Amino acid sequence: MKEDIDSVFARDPAARNTLEVVTCYPGLHSIWMHRVSHWLWKRRLYLVARLHSHLARFLTGIEIHPGAKIGRRFFIDHGMGVVIGQTAEIGDDVTLYHQVTLGGTSWASEKRHPTVGSGVIVGAGAKILGPVVIGEGAKVGSNSVVVKEVSPGSTVVGIPGKEVLGPQSKEASSTMPPKPDELQKQIRLTLQHGDMPDPVAKVFHCLIERINVLEQEIKELRHSEKDNKKP
Image 1 (cartoon, one colour):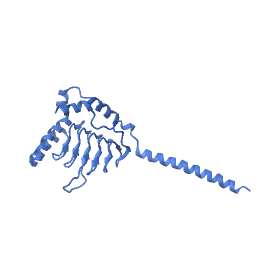
Image 2 (cartoon, one colour):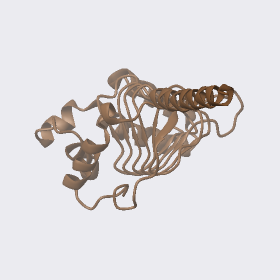
Image 3 (spheres, helix red, strand yellow):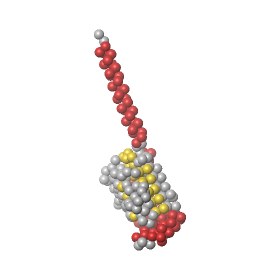
Image 4 (cartoon, one colour):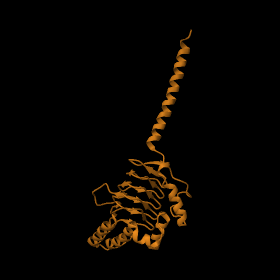
């Protein structure tokens, strides 16, 4: 529990003291309640586990299926509207913001929810759907819809989600920093959505460049044609 509390201080500058974190952070409450639900689920007390998780949803606004597997130092900021499905798997040091969905795309009783690697950051309102793998240290921009696998250390934005930044260096994308202060600094630097490239703008930029090249070629052909017509 101390580790969970420390992860809040590392990733939320609004956290002032331990009492405030323990009493006023629904994301933390939902994680603690999920551990109880998951313990019950593994012992095949399915109905009791579902009732307990339903109580957690009522109290926190966060819905985590008791079958979901969640690693250490998991942090949900704000939390309202977060949904995590039954077969979802989440690694260590993962951060989710409000209204994130780790959802399924199949009605079959099989692996149908995402696997989120360690150190991943998922922005507010993002949806990750299906049994896709989000590589370690990846970042998913706010309101993105991800339906394909994401490379480790890369950044994904848009609908559907597209990789706009490739994997970072090993040092820059370390998923388990040794100190909370370093983790806080890293997360602050990687959540600047305004600095993320726009994949649509990039496409238009490439098209404009291509048009300029074609126009220049047409001009050269016209000059060449005029020169050939001269006696």
